[in-house]
Amino acid sequence: MLADFDASGAGSPGLGWNSSDPVEVRRRIRTGQYNGQTGGLAKGCVQANFAVLPAAYADEFARFCQRNPKPCPLLAMTEPGSPHLPELAEDLDLRTDIPSYRVFRDGELDGNVASIGNLWQDDFVAFALGCSFSFEEALVDAGLSLRHWNDGSVCTMYLTDIECAPAGRFRSRMVVSMRPFTPADAIKAVQITSRYPRVHGAPVHLGMPERIGIENIERAWEGDDPVIGSGEIPVFWACGVTPQVALRAARPPIAITHTPAHMLVTDIRNASLAVG
Amino acid sequence: MLADFDASGAGSPGLGWNSSDPVEVRRRIRTGQYNGQTGGLAKGCVQANFAVLPAAYADEFARFCQRNPKPCPLLAMTEPGSPHLPELAEDLDLRTDIPSYRVFRDGELDGNVASIGNLWQDDFVAFALGCSFSFEEALVDAGLSLRHWNDGSVCTMYLTDIECAPAGRFRSRMVVSMRPFTPADAIKAVQITSRYPRVHGAPVHLGMPERIGIENIERAWEGDDPVIGSGEIPVFWACGVTPQVALRAARPPIAITHTPAHMLVTDIRNASLAVG
Image 1 (cartoon, one colour):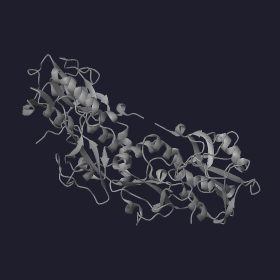
Image 2 (image 1 turned 120 degrees about the horizontal axis):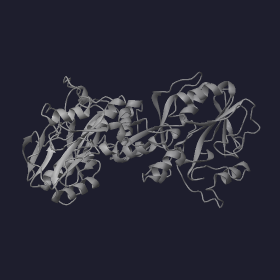
Image 3 (image 1 turned 90 degrees about the vertical axis):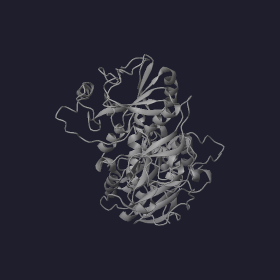
Image 4 (image 1 turned 135 degrees about the horizontal axis):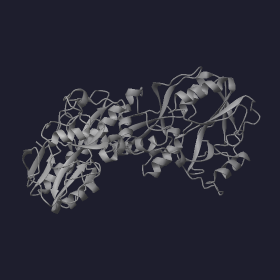
């Protein structure tokens, strides 16, 4: 099973501490007091997909992101060796501030760990990529209803036949996430998510799954199988799982990502990413 | 047959005079030297739907427009008795500057005339409403292809079961215009036309004609029957024919509109209407 970067919707854990403060969220994670999913924490703040690679692969991966901004919207990348991204949060330490990490060796999952200080290399370059949580919050704030938020399921994902632009050893077909909407809400969803190009932006497709290589819309490639109402059409967004597929294809000796649904919590406000 | 406000696409008539200058276009029309369709004239400038009503009906019609901005995007309205709208063009005289007018009495078409100076009343209020020409130009400028522009047909229109918000004696179901696009282009079309709320704005529907009361997508209610490719979905915009249906329903003793495809040519640039 492939890890899904953009797995789950919101949910307020009711943790007994101030889980709305991103600094406090990171402090709890850093000190081992919290290691759960991040959906619903630090509401209003950007949560990011995370990946770290040796410098020998990082330039190619950065190029892959640049060429495929819808599945791989690059929010920030570190200087080689630095575990800090002050533009996302002043106190952020990427070695400790994510609740759970996944370690890949030669493109294969080697296990999950709670921190990566002992794995950190001087040539590591870390990447923070936009995540669908941000645009989902914008959709819900605008009054749209997300079925997977309401029923607690995992957003449906499909592997399409859309080829991403390759960069060096990085290549992948595009993974998409799907949310069903009435036609009128689908139009609103295009309008709203168009304002958020740094978190996947507008949909890449709607209404005709077979045209992007999805043979059976009823069957998820990742996440839960969908429920699509008779008055609804499927709307497809480029998905943050795509770079993970590319990362595995490149088979770097080591690569580290967040564990699905255990995201990098930043201080940046979702609303601040809006354009137009 | 109902008159279609938003009938035809572009086309460069090659008239032997400077038809790209809106002032010259109006001067030729005013002096009787031109009385044809306005598509392709004064390219880049807003062309508007036109309606004039006695003051006793005008307030209700203004309210109808205000409540239904997608089919009736009100660009400008005159002071009672004034035939001028300097915000659209300094020299504009609404009694003479449209190539052909339609006169309605008690809601019934009474005939077409070349000018309305002899019909003008001191209590007339004139309205200029946004027209699909403006957003179609934006779509084509963005690289999208409009079938009815390419094959010289009239854009397909349908009467839906979407009830407009009534205002006094004015009421109508919404008329929509339809343009077929691939899903990817449909998304672009939503993005582009969302920037033009003063000329119908974003689509009101896509993909499921039966959901808005269109029983047979193959058969136009107005305009030409559609050609929809196998990889295309129908995209529906609110149409400027809607206010004409409402105007007829109100049955004012006299009302005057432009003749379909013979629009009010203004000095305002289409691009200046863009928001966001």
